[in-house]
Length: 356
Picture 1: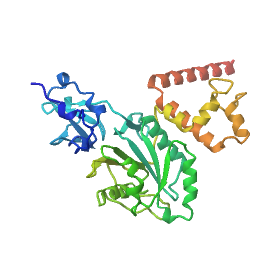
Picture 2 (picture 1 turned 45 degrees about the vertical axis):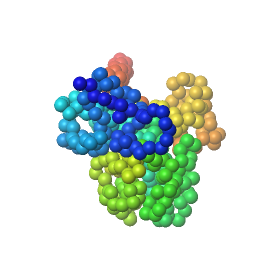
Picture 3 (picture 1 turned 180 degrees about the horizontal axis):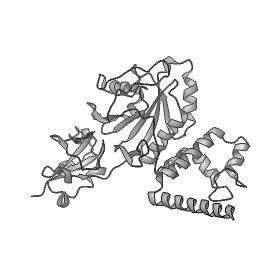
């Protein structure tokens, strides 16, 4: 028997307003329903991953609230065609967006952060936590994932001049919106409303203690997640969110709260970096050498613009650092071994010449 998937497909004909289906309240869209082949997928049903645990995935669907054992390469926000007979054979649907980073430490594995997010709120506070380089990393990550980034500056009441932070954040990219808001007031509801509509999935990224969980609670008008104050001595926060989890508002907005991430190593984000530093990339295209590193090479358009005061030297340095890091992290193991082998061979050759 082949399952009837008509209830998972978008309605045709009338454009009249209607109540969302149980799946639509979880973020189900035509992008996902169009991937379904009734003959191929048999009795499977769409479910969404709302939590990832060591012992498996917590998923929700139309009348489904269950766990899937480990073995599926999925993350929070993923949609899965759940196979009740053989859960580990469930299929992960193609993602509309994906956040990932290089795993912390020396491990070069990629770590999936979240999938199928529409808007990411990058949260920082108007104090010592504010770090333009870290914000650039988050924006690069969002652009690469094809997700709309919005920077939120919290705790303006705790600083003398919030406008200074606003001006600095606005220099990152003309393509992003920056909002200053007090997470403990009524501002989150009104200021975040344009991105928090039915069927949308939003995520909060940022360091610990900047107010992510407070903002999540504000959207729900209640205590959904735990919160904690920052330490006064260094403006660093305490971890209150320990895992990534999707929450759903009554009006059908999927909200993702994430643990604070101070270490954010990027990989395969060349396009994202080019988007954030589009002016520098354009200048680099005018350099005399295609592989110009903008160090000591002659006729370097980037270095010339920096010397003439046309571009900010510290911003150029951050761009070069991110580009070098991305190139290294994205290199395959085979490429790195080949480069190391060539380097060692060159060193031995020089040593032999010196002995002679």
